[in-house]
Image (cartoon, helix red, strand yellow):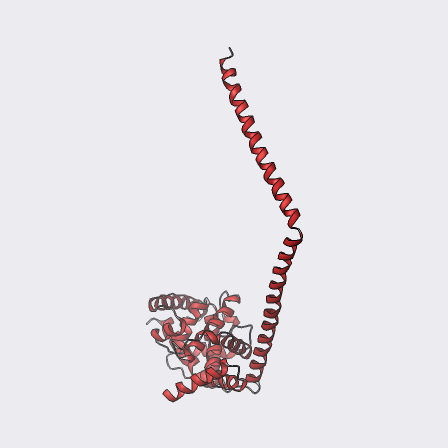
Length: 194
Length: 110
């Protein structure tokens, strides 16, 4: 790990000096991290590649401000999350999800998860992901982020605090409120089925 | 855990399995595009920097030049304004003392 840290430090020095090859290496190294965050918090109107590109542009624009207090990956994660949240804030929230908004596979998945013994195949897993994203779109961006990190990525409260810079009590309060709203949306969606 | 929470937990559990579907491999040419855009950004920023610093220097010399050229006019105007202000203040004072002189006379008049 120290060797990795050393490599990153020297890579950053070269990037700051304007070395194009070092910048290319940095983008290649960080892409998997950035694309995971972007995919988990992608606004409807943007493509994941465009948003990832914007994240990297911001990273390069502010790289001089990186002081090495936190690991570079954490610093980039925070930039990626902030960029996604800004776009999510700009987009209009879905008022509410209705049964008629769901695709055929999503309906199958939803009917499946209503019974205890549900096992999803690959296609259904993708549909479940879409469905979760649609439900999360009903929430405001901050609540959406907390639930996505807690439930989908299974991060701990302290990890979320580290990534977002929010305090632990704030995260817990947001999670509590977001779950309450989600419960309401989901019970309305399932209303005709229960 | 109530029924809705159980449904949500199962739905999220199914959604988590979809994470492996999307590839995390960098698309071809992505890094090159980012670096090219970065260069464009730097160049446009440096052009603005170049122009704005020169515009500031030009504006400063323009200001100094106009002060030097119009020094006499500015100076004359300033002196005449000062004189006018002094006389108006003086007139106001004279008027107010004249009114003050009249007041006792008005009071004493039956």
